[in-house]
Image 1 (tube, rainbow, N blue to C red):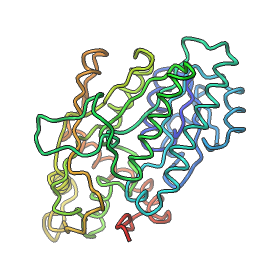
Image 2 (image 1 turned 180 degrees about the horizontal axis):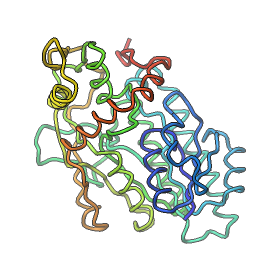
Image 3 (image 1 turned 90 degrees about the vertical axis):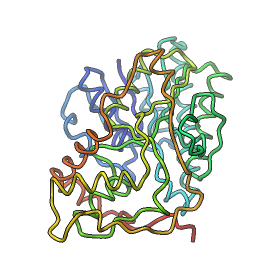
Image 4 (image 1 turned 60 degrees about the horizontal axis):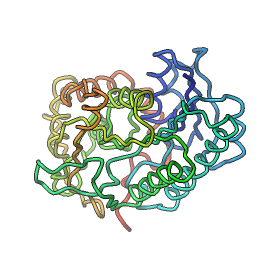
Length: 349
């Protein structure tokens, strides 16, 4: 199968690219190489004859038409997006432009290509989204997001992703485009961009800087190891019925404060701090505006229908992640030098 992966130089996209090439799929990586992208993420497959790279923006219809015509993919895996909630608070327009307008442009290019090809039933457009479109959950552990949970986005980022989800479903219902959708919980693991929570904790701890925890740290997230997510995405692409949506979660709820303390404990073992436990660096800071209290996914549908479950526990995944950052300093130091990385964003000023 030949896959066109948008955002393949990003965090989740690069995990999909590496896994797909490793499984023998041809992959065309389409990425605009904005601030959060890094071609080092796919260096391990860059010389593989199954891999090709196209630098292009999903808002550029002419470029998309050229790429579809040149590569003739069997499927699109759409992961290109602005994804950092804090940045969306400071600059929502970029998120609307890329995540909404860009998705619309990509859908139209894919529809035109699919129509010219005779509308093959085997073609798929897989839209990869987030559980944040569902809003915030109460503390009750029995209440979780399902595929039938009403949308209630509460940040510019989640609103832009909700809009893109609706567009994809509309293109299926109106034009017959064969689509599948997935909504995932918080990803983590190797190659996670340094402005996200888990890398921030690890890198601030290593630099002896305060480790920021928003509010009182009680916000709960369901964490999904990125390589497990990539495995689930390829499974959905190949086996899901057209028009079906799946929620993909790690079944690993943990409060932000507990997560930070877990990371500090791992660092205490692997890179002891002369001045004492890394948890002493924790600093509570002003909360993010509109910070969702809790996310938790019920992955029952994907387990029942496709037989998928996460293979990496949260404690195993955190250990792997910390070890990866300790072993790949050159990678993250280069990204820390990019504009805005490491600066507190999204304070609502």
